[in-house]
Amino acid sequence: MAGEPVPDQREAVVSVKEAAMRYGHRTVFKDVTFDVRRGEIFVILGGSGCGKSTLLKLLIGLMPPSAGDITVLDGDWAKLQGDAKRRLLTRIGVMWQSGALLGSLTLAENVELPIEAHTRLPAAARALVASAKLGLVGLGDAAERLPAEISGGMVKRAGIARAMALDPEILFLDEPSAGLDPITSAGLDLLIMSLARETGTTFVVVTHELQSILAIGDRCIMLDKDAQGMIAEGDPKKLRDESEHPTVRAFFRREAM
Image 1 (cartoon, one colour):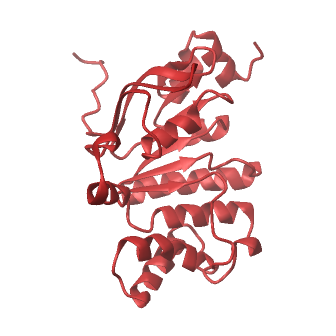
Image 2 (image 1 turned 30 degrees about the vertical axis):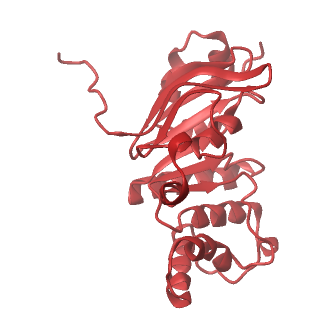
């Protein structure tokens, strides 16, 4: 019917169904279900201790869920072994909150690490790829610098470049704006949106930074520590403007509860 929203027909590249994570008798979250569609910037948000980082670890195969199913690019981490698991790892990229660069290596050498680990490209070709990836994130002139010689924002950009080294279909970013000043954070948001648009890469971003969520997020889910699971899903701007859930309203409107 005229006026009704058109369903998004893009395929799901991440599918989470009734996922739960428990440590002993403590439940971090339960009954978490959502899909991430190809080409979107999907945000996992929530307050401290709600399980955002734990969920990220499940999505990239670092640990299995206590219950439920998680499929990434048609692969189930729990069922993959050996070469099949390694192949799936080359189709995703991860940037950790700290950037996780090796301090003894230049930025170019850091970006080359996954290329060397997962391909047989000669050194000259690896160097060309690293140079191209650093150029994509605005660090083309900093390739020979060490992590200690650059700013925090540049470290985050270099971490993204390394995560993109193998042309992944999905990039997982852990708290990309954490510790950055507002101007640097806004620049990183613009970079993420530009990369998503220009490369078609799907982004899954874990963050609690409200300005970034509203700037970059196509869709999001919100986890809550007290509820032990999801309390919201959708366009973050619509959640800000329309949600009647008290915790969601408080988060998006910066209201004390």
